[in-house]
Image (tube, rainbow, N blue to C red; front, side, top):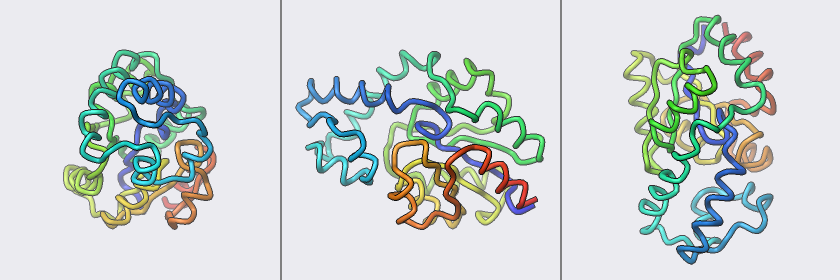
Length: 210
């Protein structure tokens, strides 16, 4: 078995939060004088730093703005659905004997509430959330240490360019999913280990690795 541990990103990867996040951001942009998102398709081609710069979000304001964003998102956590096909994939992955966890920039409480409301919490033995947008590399390494597995035995699943970069920096394989924030083209240009367009493809990758 190549992969002993699967670590998931939450927003856009496990959970269908993109439309909700767009609406919350645009509401916040009006209050905080950031540029609103008027072209979601253009955003899909940007990394996080490009997004912040093009939407006039100063880096020093990110921690406070993101904390406020998570506070609003938390009020809706129980109503967040999993992305199509994820609910069917999770039990199949567990049956393969692969352990699963979540490493996300979202808050732990929001992730746990969403998983519980979607009857998916039993498939995860580890949830690590934070209010920091950057710094996933350290938390990925920490998760591998928690499970006593080598980085080469971990597959991280994410929907953003920064997920690919964090995984590569941590020495882990990464499955970039095209149903989330960044487009397949943007993800492919950063050379993920796997590029996935549907959860069934992910399942096949895992079956082939057994």
